Length: 94
Image (cartoon, rainbow, N blue to C red; front, side, top):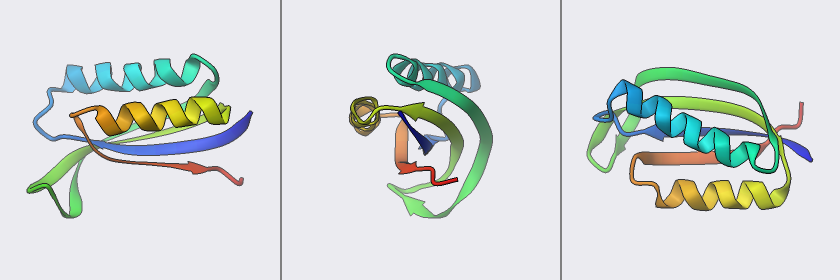
């Protein structure tokens, strides 16, 4: 298992309790074959530029250990989830 981190942005019109449900859903996917070491819900922030006519979003940063299969599945699920504006998974070298 390798160390990874994922940052994703959730749509601003999503309610706060639904944001936590989305975070729990993605952490569950990671826990299915890896382990979450740290989850940081940064909160609602202004985007640097408009994405699909949206100017704000809820930022979430997650550090985790997982296999490549789990990372590929997480990326696939994030791409088809309507509430997620953008996501990026990178390998943590630290």
